[in-house]
Image (cartoon, rainbow, N blue to C red; front, top):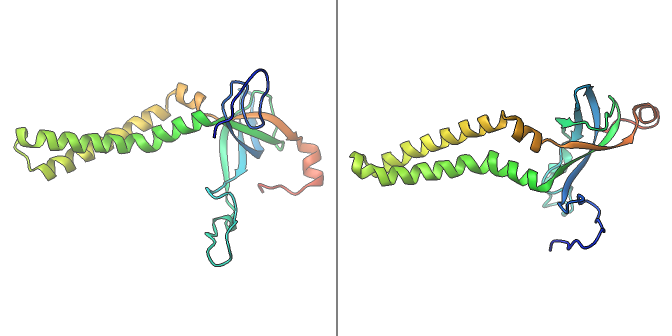
Length: 180
């Protein structure tokens, strides 16, 4: 059930515009003066941790893997800072659609077009569906690569550093790194 926003109340984990946000904590590995940084975070699985019995656990939480991401750095976080990064859920879903579903949709469109064009072209229906489906998949992959290279898509779907949780000096002295 989606929360209802009224007045000036902002619920935790939401943006001022009312969009739910994906949020993670990471460490800035490198910061650049032109407004972006490389942040290392723990890669999280779909389950978010083991809450199952010993015999039926998926064990995905037993492998610790790190992920480096390029993120927008409007608050000028420095190398070594522990930061909070956010991405609007709507942008995350748009990215998932573009990069995962678009090639599949174009594959299906190509396969159906191959079925439709097979008879007028004198092809076997199966061969037409396979050939045009492959062409649709290739077109989908090329389209995804071209979209990924545009500034608009990269800027809209880039996570943003929203806060410095602990600065580099204090964090390094008192706590072991979560991402080393």
